[in-house]
Length: 266
Length: 232
Image 1 (cartoon, rainbow over the protein chains, first blue to last red):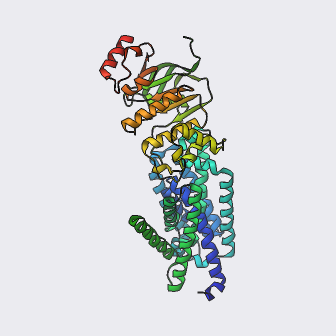
Image 2 (image 1 turned 90 degrees about the vertical axis):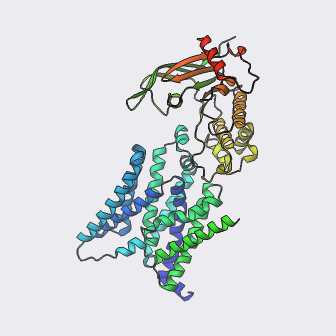
Image 3 (image 1 turned 120 degrees about the vertical axis):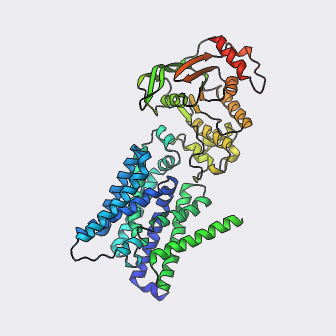
């Protein structure tokens, strides 16, 4: 294992794992307390449309996926604010249409046999230097947003009606949270894949929510837990030659069950 | 007795939801230091009227004039986001995002008898305790007009009395408008009552209260009904 650390791709994987875990911890906390888990799931799957588009137009994958995911997030924000009772239908629609668009674009891309599995289940061992910059920038952006707006984001997340009465622009913050969630999903796809994104956004967050008495602490603890699960999963994946994304999620799930058992026995 | 200044004036108010008329020709005056109760059946439009006063809904016809800018609201549902990781004191401080003073927040928690729970997680409190925190959140913005929607709907009878005793105390310094369906308890505390079922019927209780035995724990609703009919 020590010698493995000298490989560039392992180093990249570790840095990416930590960056994405911190992003997931912060944004996952916001997604969970705002009950947006399935919105984030819909965005994750719709993002596959962006992967197909990027391959077809030879754009950087992150760029294409980000544009598509943000677009899906804005549509979801709009629907939530205008027609909340139809939201589940729209999530399903965007979910399926996004994936279908992606598959058609991949079909149309000449001579390119894309490895669909790596997007569905992640490819943390194939993270490149440029991916790390994207992940780092996103983390910086999220931290910046929190520094500026944390009290307002907290108010909107806890009680949006009261926040609106206090004069806070609730639709703006709602859309902002969803857009950040979309960007986080895009980077998380690289690590655990779009099918497993939801688990990374929710498992550490659930544990942290039980243990913390403030949203900020919950974000930090979620990030730390996610990093621990991701690195443990990565180690298992490398040692036993297993799919990295699935290993990370199952490691998280194992610790989650352990947490539930410990809590019950107290 | 000198008449207090008018703080809320509602004139010929109409409100529709979809195509259904919810409020019809509602006229209402709330004076400073009133303890004003809005009663009526479910679906009669009392919460809707409160939301119109708050500006959450816009009237279809008619006008609402509220003299003060300092209005605060206590919502009916205190069970929203019960798993949210937040302490009572932080909920209170959401009442006014510009005021960062923890001392002020502790002070309003003390006012509602909840200072010992300042750092308790909101989900660990009982319904009545949470209701007090919501009242403290409203008080944190130093309101002149306090609007409450069914403040005792999730609370046991002894807790209900405590909440109303608290409101009575607050009424010494501010105007209170409370929506409730519990006529017998409201009548002991309110000086004005309006019954809403699409239309509004107004009752000034200050004159007829002396006819009531207010020391009793519970006032017979039949007796009340008779009194109200007399006062028309």
